[in-house]
Amino acid sequence: MSMLPPPECPAHAHHGSGPVPLAAVVGSSDPRAVYRGLREKWGSVAKVELEPGVSAWLVTGYREMLTITRQEQLYSRDARNWRDLNEGIVAPHSGLLPMMGWRANVIGADGPEHRRLRKPLDDGIARMDQRRVRREVEALCTDLIAAFSEHGSADLVNEYATIVPMLSLASLFGLNGEEGRELLDALIALFGSADGSQAGNRDFEQILLDTVRERRRNPADDMTTVFINHPDLHNEAERLQSIVVMISAGNETVTAWISHTLRLMLTDLRFAARLHGGRLGVDDALDEALWRDPPMNNMPARYALHDTELGGRLIRRGDCLILGLAAANDDPEVRQDGPDDGWGNRSHLAFSAGPHVCPAQVPARLITRTAVQTALHLLPDMRLAVPADELAWRPSPWTRVPVALPTVFSAARVPARVPTGTGP
Image 1: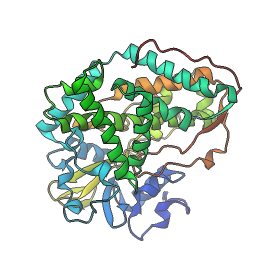
Image 2 (image 1 turned 135 degrees about the vertical axis):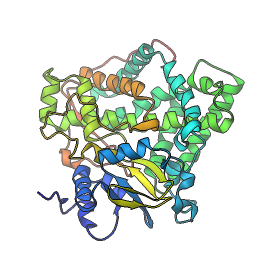
Image 3 (image 1 turned 45 degrees about the vertical axis):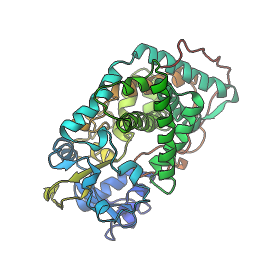
Image 4 (image 1 turned 60 degrees about the vertical axis):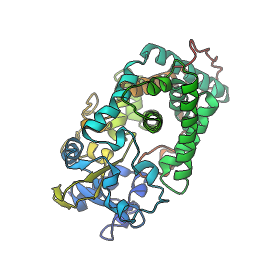
């Protein structure tokens, strides 16, 4: 049976008329239907548009995803290999560059250089006291819910899911709450990959650079000091960019993960009934969210180092390939047919694969699980305040975060907690 997209979706509008704008796919009401339409037309590697005049290959096949993430000798993470950037097709002021341009960090490196730059991230995460992090995140979540619990309504994205990861991560790196909220505003602009993206990136980096320089003068018991003193980071740029990776990637993805898990519980009655009935645990809900709507719907990028073939498409040297993580999770070769068959299955590609697989899966799950559990416990009768099909999405070709998640619940006073430490 042909799986053509519905008439109102971007893939239908562009069917046979050129590349589909990737941001329109992520922002559509049903991205999975669009990805299936792209697969129907193109197969497992589809042509998409990143911005007007700039195209790329979107990899939608599960097996093809494993190929490009595991073969770094052929598919590089270094954006200096991007032909359209080198030839000036991507303008210097492009909103794509804060997410896709080369940086002196682990994301833009391959081979031994990548391993050197990844070690500080792995070492920093290994030093985290997970029990302390959980206690501090629970206290933060309780305080946030206490601020709106008496109102009987709240926006669980902007009053909760967006704030929890940023303030948690900011505290880990020694920033206060005000600085954390400034970082959040800058990051939302950065991930939008639109007109305000470069300004957001500059603001984000300046806040962190000021923190790095302050910690060099006055070391503290925080992750910033750990990165400053790590022997594998050779200069200020590498130290700064390593912190940029940890905070930017961790915040946006955890915001999306919390939002989608809560959205599932509020909009999917079958799922919510099973969760509240005890037949599924919170971890099952978290994994189902990763399958349906991974925090990064699309991950930039890989760049072909040689002419090659992938999924029946000719890939030229310098071509840009986008990791379609959401599309690959829905690949008919791997997805389950039954509505319940995928629960408990963690073979999804939400964290990517290969050498660049996400290094922070454990703390990300810890923060997300704590946020979801706390909301379940303190707001047990919450329900969506608007029809599910009225939910809108922040503009981005990469992440799929609701603009808002308005909820109502029984008004009650939740007492705030006093954190047991100075921060996670």
